[in-house]
Length: 232
Image 1 (cartoon, rainbow, N blue to C red):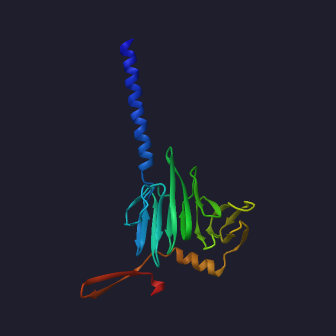
Image 2: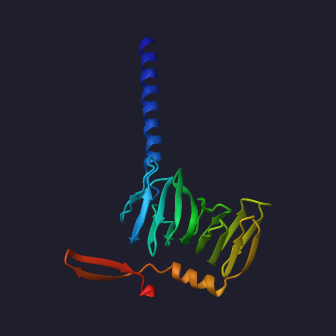
Image 3: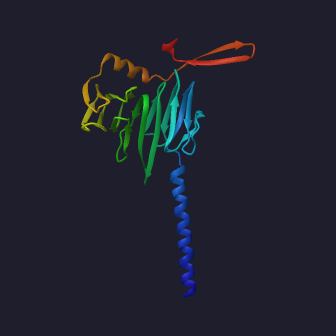
């Protein structure tokens, strides 16, 4: 009887340790990585209040923040390959992910700026974008989301469908189909329409990730600069 009791105590201890390892693994496993950076890109780890210079290939955990500077770009690829984000210049966003069985539910909070996206068709997973004024559910589509200085949100859908809900005011709901755009004002009012020429130009620009490099010889050595062809 005594041996049986000791056995169950040891079994409970082993189980507790195993659960602890699983919980730590969920918290520390990266949900995405920085695939590419151009010029001024930084990120802030979950356990830090300081910004650090981003590096290509750096893993990203849930709750970490990315920031781009002037004429800068960050490409973020989710670890399961379901989505690619193009964080354009002067943008700030948080990346979140929760693992559930063999899937990752994702929610990217865009604080300011413009983020282009290309998301594969989702089955059971959630893929959401949140801004100060709206939340958008994505299932296999491409487009961009832009947050203005007044926290208004513009969502452009190139193809597929996006379900949107305002987070303030009357909390209106709407859908955006391919070829359409939607704006949520700072008061939560939703306005829909076809993609304008300006929005189309922004979308086309948001998909461009190729850069050119020039080398400048100085007395202190060689300086290498990267820039977008359209900014030449």
